[in-house]
Image (cartoon, rainbow, N blue to C red; front, side):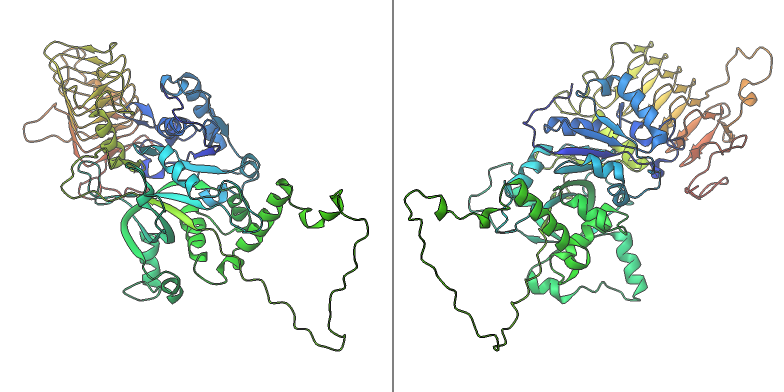
Length: 570
C-alpha cells in the first residue's frame, strides 16, 4: 500500500492525464477508457506517478484531465483496488476549455489551473514509471534554492527538470525512442562533498533544450548541416556539454512565480520545448528575459514577497525616534547639492535582471555491458509507446517482492491453473480470477484480471489486459491485447450445426490460411484493440487489429510489410 515515507516537502503535484495518441490502439475512446487507465503490469498507468508522489511525501495531488475523461477516472479512483489504496484520494480538475489536443504550456494558462496553483508545484505526466526516489530529486532542489527570499539580493527560486538516457537497457530501450537535444553546464562544486548515494553530482544547469525533431527542422529550414549556436553562450559559459541521447521525463519542479511566467506568454504551447527552452536561453542571451516578461514577473514577485515578509515599510521607520535615550532635539543636517544650473547626469539604468538558473537532473547513461537497471542507476521511463508499454510491464514482472513496484503475488491466489500447465512465475504476472486451461505455457507474460486462456495455448512475452479471452491452441508472441478482446482458437467439435461460429460476428481479423496451419491462430508482435475479435486461423506479424469508426470492421494491418498494410497514424 502506498504511503508517505518522507516529510512533506510543501509542494503541490499536478499530473497531466493526456490523450495517449501514440497508444491509439487502446485509447481510441478516451471518454470510456482514457490513457491514464491503460494498465502497466496490471496497475493503471496513473497509479505509478501517484505512488511516486506519495512515497516522497506529497499528498496534495491533482489530476488534470479533459472533461470527457473525468467520469472514468473518478470511477477508477473509487473502485480499482490499486487506486483505492492511495490516501488521501487525489483531486480531479477538468477545466472546461481543456481538450485532448491542448498543449501542456496552454494548460498552465487555463483559469482553473492558475487558481489551483497556490505555491511551489510539480508537473508530472500520467505515463511516468520511475525507480528513482522522488525525495532525492526534491532534496537537491531544496538544497540549491534559498529557504527564504531576500529582497536585497533579489535571488529567486530556480526550477528543475529530469532527463533520462534512452539507450543502454536491454529489453526496454528501443531504437525509435524519442530523444531531446540538451546543453548543460556544470554547477560550482559544493563546499562539502555530497554523501554517497546523493544525486548532487548529476545536477547541472540547463542552457538549451529542444526535441530532436525540432532540431532537425531548424537545420532543414536554415539549409545547413549543423546547428548554429550564439557566441554569447560560450562567452558566459566556457565549457558546455551537449547531449543527444537523453529524453525529457516531463517531470518539473517549479517555483510559484512560473505560474505568472506561463500566463504572460500566450505563445507557449509546450512546457518542454517552449517554457523550458526559452527560460534556459534567457540565462545567457542578453535582453531575452525582458522580451519574455521574466524581468516583470520576477519584480512583481519580489514586491509581493517583501510585503508578505513585512519588509515593505522598512525604509520608512525612523529607528532613532524609538530610542528612549536619545534627545528629542536632533541636529539639523543639510545635504550638499549642486546649483540648479549644473547639469546632473541621470542615474545609471538598473542592470537587467538575471533569471534564476534552470536546473536539471541528468541521469547518467548506462554502460553498454549493463543489461538491467542496477541500484545506482534505477529506471526512469515515459510509457507513451506500445513498445515501452510492453517492455516496461515485462520488466516489472521480473522484479522480486522486495522491489518498491512489485506485486504481492506473482500468481494471484484466486487464479486457477489447469492440469499440466506451466507458468514461469519468476518473470510473469497472473492477476486475480484468471483461468488457465490444461497444458497452457506462460512465459514472460503479464495477464490481467478475469482473463480466460484456453487449453494448449502458448503465451510468450505478451501483455493481456483485463477480460481477454484466448481460445484453445492460440500462440501469441510479443503481443498486446486490449481489454475484453477475444482471440479465437481452433474450431471445436461443438459446432453441431455444421456452420463455423467465427463467421457470424463483426470486427474480426482476417484468417490467413496456408502452410498446413489451418485452424491455428498465431500472432507475433501484434496489437489487438479492446473488444476486437480475431478469427480462428488468423496468422499475423506486426499487425494492428482494430475497428473503423462507423464501419463493420477492418482487417489487421501492419507497418507496411503486409498485404493489408495501412499507415500507423489514423
